Length: 296
Image 1 (cartoon, rainbow, N blue to C red):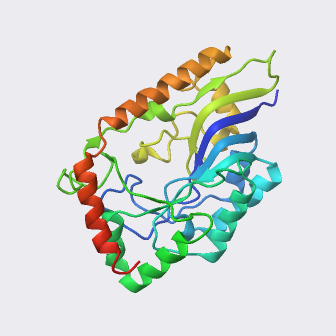
Image 2 (cartoon, helix red, strand yellow):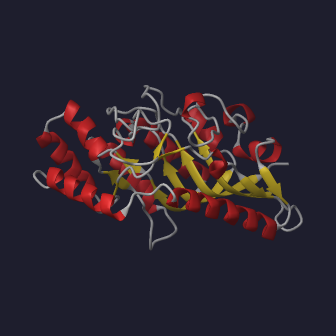
């Protein structure tokens, strides 16, 4: 029986390419690996819809070919998504890549909020950028990205530092509290009821790297290994949701929703305990404003 999957959240890694070496990076060392067409076809072989779809890990503007083929496969498979997003490191503007991202966004069904793309704008990215490029070149890239319709002036800073980050102590992270990653937050919850929804699997979330492995967010040291089952090997997400002992399954929708909500509520509370204080946030903003305002 061929199952089709509807996901609340789907995040995939188009590539592991990056031109920066940020002190607090949680993605590990950059490589030249990127998603191939066969992998993309396997990943989207049975996904028909996602609420939020986005890219993670590498800088997408360094992987225009991977973004293009992913876009092509999504079109061919007819994958529907409500909103689309991710993060840009602010140092690279690739016209072809931004065009492909915009095309994906244009198919978002939530017209009120089709994109949640943001540019990472914080002291760590600033320091890393200054090591590889001039202020003038950085300014040009930032202006192009921040004024692009995909981004529309949205920015985000690194607010929570996990232990995978390269920073060795709290001084390196400018006073930001470190917290352990929470793999359970990205463990799929799924609802399967053949009588009510034949051949449909409703799942909470899945993260897939550029090799086609379904991975637990935060477990970057074992990215090439999977915690749920291998998407490429099993040719699709459905088999993982059906067969992996890492997936929590429910046959009653209320139970699924309740478990899903409790998991998300617990994660939000966990993050609140590690957020920056208002005083520190203001000091940080003032410092950043002073540094960036001279050339943005």
